[in-house]
Image (tube, rainbow, N blue to C red):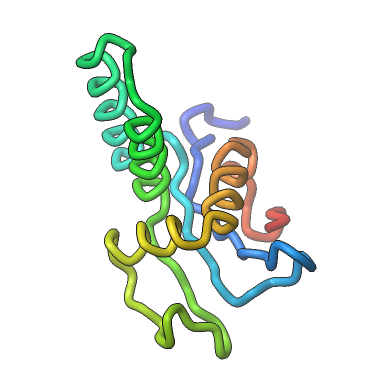
Length: 130
């Protein structure tokens, strides 16, 4: 018998792929499911800000909200091999994460796509494809 409450989403690893040849570049992002308290808090903050502007938000506000959700959904990273960012393997923090995602939109895009794959957060590590 399966207990319904045992079916829970879990953090997952995302291997970032080179946008040209789809080979692993050596950066792994740790993604949180949308049910994680940190992600839910960011979603509420974004919704509250939209309501405060009565739905009339600027493109800049929408981009800031997207970045806020994205950074709230990434809990860490791993740097493999010789890969660096501006000559170093930076420690994980929100400032550096935001800088990396803004400077390398293809990384942000891969994270966005992976975060929208809800089922992947329910698979075990052996079942995960990326």
